[in-house]
Image (cartoon, rainbow, N blue to C red; front, side, top):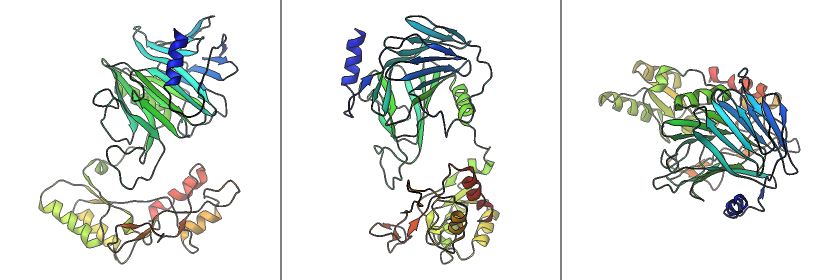
Length: 408
């Protein structure tokens, strides 16, 4: 029966190639607070990081993450039991049951309530994917900047299939996916009990929330390891607290940033900005922040001002401040390739830009020229010229770029 179910699941997959089940695993070996499984298809390691956080990593490779800042949460107090048919990891909060044949993982809490259950794990060349049980009364939240309802089950349990692939989507509607920001993390809530799953993979990835097959939630990527973290709450705030302990926390924002922000594409020239501020105050509408998009820039170059549109930025900012407004100016990380332009010259000298595989600096157009209204892009040609791009994977490049902010 289990084999029939697995064949049904794999047959329901999108045509990508030839999906192959990860198959059966022999008895695992113990490595500290982890159980390591290995067969001809893959290596799978299940690790207790804390009483509430379990890491699952399938497929070996360099264990590197751009997202995770901390995996050291002290002694998880885990009890590992190795058997012939199944093995377990037990903590004060969770029990992880790992079935060997076929290889699947199920998690329950200390009260014995079932939380998360694998239905299949499969590989297709470099791609990998896991399918999990999705109950009718479970609600799925998160996954970053996505359109549609807050609950990704949808209105009629139809579910959504959502792609993680950061895209500069100039215009979009409620069905457009993907758009700008990818956050491969979701929270499951059922009868007041919640947990989260964070999928740590930089390849193009996808989350299917009961869309392709009702009763199944799946996620996977085109390459890299199937590397994810199960994070127990049970309260949502506890899930978020532990997720941010794993991935890092932003500095506390200034209190004014939490007020009403007036933002659109786009406010210019200076007279228009002042008019917006005046209308808010005359109409007694509370507002704390006005945003400027790219049209305040000189030829779209970061850390510059278009002095025709904004002849005296310091005076304008000061006047807005007196009237209770802060001004936020957008900063896009694409210095123009232009000798004599400080960000380009210093970035070139410091070796801070993204490169092609052959070692040359990667260049590409970013913003087109402007149509007569100064707002509508004319995509027939670039008015900006080619840009270069800071390599933010380098600490030195991050420090160099951040150094421009206090002086802009």
